[in-house]
Length: 243
Ligand code: ZN
Image (cartoon, rainbow, N blue to C red; front, side):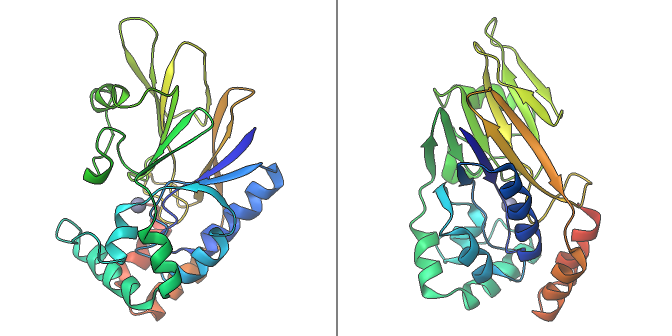
């Protein structure tokens, strides 16, 4: 089955529409979301309107729960905290209730889905190094775990021998039998890896691969919406840099 995985949409409607159009051309049987639907961007309700009817499984991100007042924003940057408060003020009650009810983890096919780290989903740890990934592999039993949160795409592979972890940023990863994988999805709505294009994953569990896809989108409009909403201009500007 071919699945599309979207993560860290962050209320960026223009990026989301470009990703959905691109994914629809590939024709996935299911759409999965790894959290952070909202926060930073200016179109939280519009993004949830598009995604909610389509997602087969989703998990909660820290920005989703912050926007519902469920977690404190003390650990957030001032920009993120301002955006969380703004989002809380504009979210419709229906969308808010939906975000609040999201689970911390889910399973789909042979994959575990979690926003940040499988070892401790509500702690929002970043998994950026092979050493950190090695510990995370002990926290799930599935052959594949899909995560978001860092906005920094890449894949960790745990080999069958000696428990060694290899890391790759190659866009296409073969899911070799006998190995296990922890794959970090790119961000749809706020890329931070130096490539400003919107990103998502395709996963084919029959053919055994995960592919990282990037798509051009209307950054000018997404930027302008953030400025028009009165959100911090830095959140608008960073979209152009992809950082
Ligand atoms: Zn995020």
